[in-house]
Length: 455
Image (cartoon, rainbow, N blue to C red):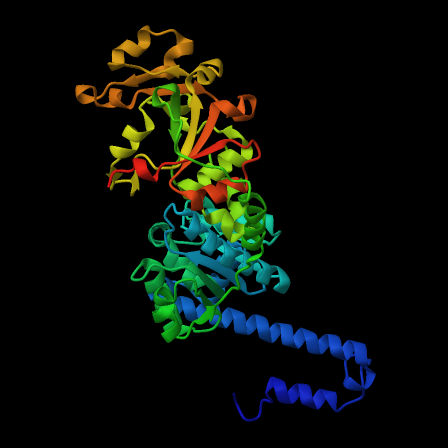
């Protein structure tokens, strides 16, 4: 600037020394002065926020930033729905199907939502990312404003060149890590895309990155790079309540493995449930993971059996080979034989039959509408009456499936309507029987089957 031209700052100072006006300090009330001070702080905050966003984009996605200016970046942020407040992005590596992992992540997500709600900030996610369905559901549950970036949205056409839209689709995690002002890493897989993207961000801007400490080993590299670890306390109330219930009923527990006529019973073995329970929607499941206790995440074969006994109902969860009917399934194979020949299926990481389940007397099963499966070749199904086609099952190569001697019933099986003497529960040992006793309102007999297992 030329020496003879006063700077704007000096010119403003000169004016303030002249006759007072409505805008001069001499005429300001304390309230108006406080408002102007707040406005200056807000303007500084917005300027700092915009600067940090631009710097992150320039450092993390330089090939994109080189084609933009701070003004076009601001337009992009506004087009995405980013407001004037910092935006929190809860991110996660792929979760898999295990409810225990879902619950650990959901506890962290619930804490993130409460934090955003308290700060009156929005949360952000990218469509089709691992965290997206969980973050979207949690934002609705906790009533937190949501910015949901959709790379397939054609409205991005004016904001992003075609090549950048394609990259946004391909590198969703990289984009959300670069754009978000604050970040909570809910679940982390070592060496995965999320870890690599967050490590790059921490080199540029270590502000506001937290990582869940559910797996300290997985979080180690992020912590060393400057992220903050977040520990969440665990509640033991539900476990204590269950122990009290069990103690009250253990004294009346009578379980034995005698008086078992195998030809008289049909058996249903329970298994681990990955994801929602039969009859439970994904929305209900996510609510249970977000708002329930840690016990809700335990869905091993014993937990499945406890749920059946507590509900006194077997929910139709299996589907027929044509995916047209929901059925309940039993086997007419004698239980000792079924358990002795069980096999571990590595492709699904579980046993085909577990030593937990429900048995129902054959005549009672027939009264409830259960019927034996019809095994055959695919074309034979069309020859069956429409109402009986749920019973059809391919015999498989060399008739391999026929050995299961399966019985089926359409829809749920109301066990409460069956004479208690016609229903039995089987578990490996007395320890598991005690847990069944806590929910066994029908007083069904409990059978120990540890001696039936193949050694």
